[in-house]
Structure formats: C-alpha cells, structure tokens
Image (cartoon, rainbow, N blue to C red; front, side):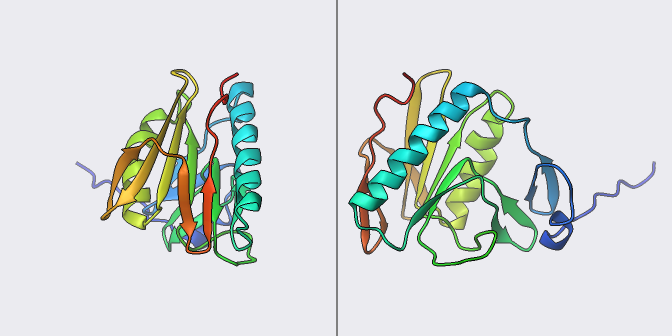
Length: 174
C-alpha cells in the first residue's frame, strides 16, 4: 500500500489560488457556486438590518461585511455569508474573531455550517452565530456562554462594550 499524502496549506498558499475557497486547518474547501435568489434576498435583508441596527446603536467601531475572508489562523480561512466585526482594521481581510457570524444554509453547505463551522466558530470565540435555514424558514441564534454555544431567542446583542443592538429577524423569508 502506498502512503497517502495529504498536503497542509497555509494562508500564503491560499492567497494564490483562483476560484472560491476556504481553508480549514490546512485543507482546501471548495466554495459552492453562487448563491440562489432566495439566499441573496435573505442575505441582503440581513445586511441592511444589521447595518441599520449598528447605526441606531451608535456602534461606530463595528461594521457588517459581506463574504470577506477571516484569517483565523495561519492555516485557516473562513468566508461567512455575513459577519460583524468591531475591529478597526483596514486590510483586505480580518484577523480577529468577528462579534457575529451569519451563515445561510444551502443544500451544499448545510452540514458544514451546522457541524464544522459551528464547532470552529465556537472554539475561535465568535460571540454570536446566526444560522438561517431558508428551506425550513427558521433562524437560530447561538450565543457563546462560558465557551459553549447555547440557542437563545432574544435579538438584543452586545457586540462590543460600546455596542448593543436590537436585530429584527421577522419577515426574512417574505
């Protein structure tokens, strides 16, 4: 039997690749084709609501970003559907754990988002993980409490010590 070679890539490698990828603990993960209309509609609504909530909350340090690379480690890069960061960086990507990550499930990403990404985001210190399921018309808000995610119903989020927002989640699927 021939030994199996599994390459271990780093961010420097990742930045040279063409196409859409994420990098999970050194393993390249191909991104899905572009999102369908429902996914885009929900994403647009959430982006707008998050942006409005940040403005209403006076959250000057925080911003909502769409499909930006989050370099979580030298061999790990995520590209969530949406995220809120309160890091005042100016690079092409972010390097600190976002305050909030939003993933909108699709048939090709469902298990990755519900299993691997949930565990990774929890371990990396993401305070809020919002999972949107367009097929079931459900939204799950996971809040990091003592290092573990617990599901909560409230939509009042404390993203930063100077930033508390009220996020409207009604009407996302209309």
